[in-house]
Amino acid sequence: MIRCQVSALLIAVTMALPSLAGAQDGKTMVAAYIDENANSYGDIAQEIWELAELGYMETESSALLQSALDREGFEIEAGVAGIPTAFVASWKNGDGPIVGIMAEYDALPGITQDRQPIRAPIEGKPQGHACGHHLFAAGSTAAAIATKRWMEQTGQQGEIRLYGTPAEEGGAGKVYMVRAGLFEDVDIMLHWHAADVNSADASSSLSNKSAKFRFTGISAHAAAAPERGRSALDGVEAMNHMVNLLREHVPQETRIHYVITYGGAAPNVVPDFAEVFYYVRNPDPANVKSIFERVAATAEGAALGTGTTMEYEVIHGLYNLLPNLALQEAMHANLTRVGGVIYDDEEYSFADLLHRTLGADAPPLESAMEIQPLAVGGSGGGSTDVADVSWMVPTGGVRTATWVPGTSAHSWQAIAAGGTTIGEKGMLVAAKTLAMTAVDLFTRPDLVTAAKIEHATSIPEGWVYEPLLGDRDPPLDYRKPAGPGGE
Image (cartoon, rainbow, N blue to C red; front, side, top):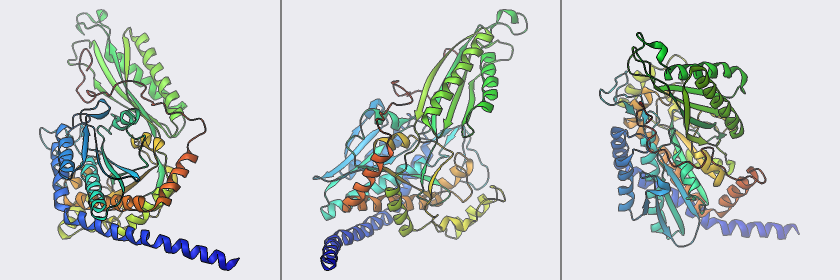
């Protein structure tokens, strides 16, 4: 009986050896392609850095990526899910797993920086890639093309897709793509993000819902006839005050942020229009939904108390990320094989100067070379529309040190490093990790099966997907400046 068990095991291992060997050869091939074409993908990233197009306005950035994929023979469907800058690029070789990789390319408003290690805003450019999505775009494209090249050369069966996903920063582009059914036939989805460390943690994120609250009042001369006016700005400020009181009475993991996007044009004119943009976050989508309803109630009360009227527009709503340990273990193994970011002398000098702006508690520069241990559990402080994808399809991700250690996302330091070869080196680490994991998924059916089983057991029984943003159309104008009469 023992002899039979051993023989069966040996047969199973022997049968698996060609597949394992093929995976190792494939990983070498995709890594070599990415290294050989590093400058080309660096150029794409830097061109998108220069463009710095905001959410749903990334026309040139999207076209640049589509052009690179078209030259490689990918079939491209543009303008998907009612979003002009969204696309799906696919390359298929017979039947087999469908593996998708996500690419983001939107910049952030209100922050700008030159490629300098000291504060140096760019005049006339009010936005920048403070979250590294230019690197995300080029790195994911490199990974998809490297995987396609390997499949083509080896005859590997299956389909590789690159999903061009706009407006991650508050526009929830992926949610509309999920709602349109664009991920329904995919086996596994992969993604990555710019960071100041190299890690592949199996952790979650915060669910998030946002809206623009618009108050309408009556204009009047603020000195000669104030009694005739009803200030829309008073409505906004009354709402903000009540929300700030509300903070004491929500779960402690909750985050609420707002900016007044329009408050009037002149102090001597009672403003008849004002707008405030709110985010509500919590690890649990159900909590986000209920807290958001309380925030909306403060807006109604503020309008009543100030004699104004109010309406609000939900801009986005995101779930919490559903981690998949099977995929994260594979990502971590490949990230470890690739290794971290090593600075040359010029990069080190740049990083050292920038590092001095980050405070005494910033990690040492050498930590960019390290791979963080695989952590399981917990929730990061941010939110992502990758989360909604992760509830529909098993999804794995990785973060790499595109920024100087200690750098926060959404900072000028992130823009600065992302505009240099420091950012590009982190991007290449991510591209190789994604492509190697794709090789694993195409050559290891057991990994795909394990990820799917884990995903299925993670979804609550009877759960039905309901987007937190409802049935609204994509808010293609959500980044346009606010003003009287709305956007």
